[in-house]
Length: 512
Ligand SMILES: Cc1cc2nc3c(=O)[nH]c(=O)nc-3n(C[C@H](O)[C@H](O)[C@H](O)COP(=O)(O)OP(=O)(O)OC[C@H]3O[C@@H](n4cnc5c(N)ncnc54)[C@H](O)[C@@H]3O)c2cc1C
Image (cartoon, rainbow, N blue to C red; front, side):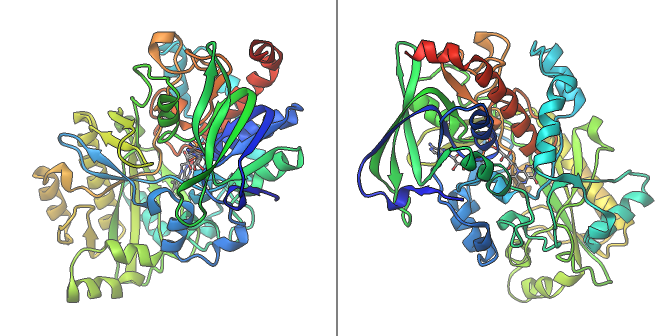
């Protein structure tokens, strides 16, 4: 795939296209391809660098994070009040966060869509209306059930524990083709098997004439007379990320797809300071327990994620199989010195079980001192209860599977050895601030609404405030969805793109 590399540019650059798309991740890539299919001239501007999928296998986990992720994967949400500090991850490369996913694919659950179409008045958000969008993307991305033969032993133990407690586990669907079970999806697939958008969507967009520009940081949307006219920014230095050489792109339609952490930053910098921009952020707080077994588990051998359970969906919890690179696990083990070495040596006997919360939100994103936003999050009382409940369930599953010790996701805590210790822990938990939580799905920072005072964009994705300006990424989701977000983002982005294609002439007239 040919990419115009901003880091190689030595002089200012300008261009004029029908549609400029900012961000090449799950949302932006789909919009670009769809509009290119509709015959429009399209340019994608991506702040991150371009790395050929063959390079991913050569990157150590820490190198991959520094190369493909924002803030080397160490970004966080500051916990306000009784809230844990949370690691929040997002991609920064051609392909965006889709390059870092575990490949898990869910549609937006029907009950969530029912809530959107009834309570929120977003009438078009029904399973039937979104079905064609999801179906096509699923086909393009080779979304399929993970066969039981791909399950790691860690996953099998998760399933065995669940079976013994009458909890139903189901196979996940993932966007892979030829997965070899290397269990390191989060660092870019080393085997080119994950159908992230750099592999599955952008090549077609490129063949249809889309110009993809990497290392291109958009700093401002040009708006005149209430209509978006294009964007300005600077190419960033490949090593330091510092903005250097200026560029400008004139366009009749501007689509912002910078992801939920950055879309509100760009909107605000461009003068769109309405009260909803950067607010209502949901994170799907996620955590895991480690379970030590007498048997050899070697959980790194198999698909990184292959099962889930919606058994506790009514309690706002999704259980999900997980694993990660041993070096990353080792860095997170409790204990120091001899105790830490003992844990590292026990790694072949460890399994990991995960869960995430269908949260109420309480997050916000705003500009501050650096290029990266200040993310804050105030966890609701209900979600705090869900955290403890989730930890209890995962602990129970681990003991039911035969674990000898269970490591709870509590900073500084000793491993527990019996179900009664688990019960005592849950009856008298420590401060929630001690919980080790992560977020891979920041969503909702420029939400869609049925009325101008309820959100940032219309159900079509167009800004309520500025004509010809669209948002098509995770920030438009009006609530948390309780399941992994790449396919939901892509489905909504496709719907928005089809709408732009249908109304393009009207936008062009407005822009004239
Ligand atoms: C480690 C990890 C694992 C995940 N696993 C899964 C999974 O298994 N299944 C699942 O469904 N979801 C998963 N997700 C979530 C999923 O990847 C995201 O929900 C989805 O990619 C969001 O799409 P997006 O278009 O909103 O943003 P992104 O895909 O993040 O794309 C935004 C792009 O915009 C670029 N950008 C930002 N600002 C600017 C600017 N000013 N100028 C130019 N470019 C800019 C960014 O660099 C980025 O490349 C995971 C995410 C992470 C981080």
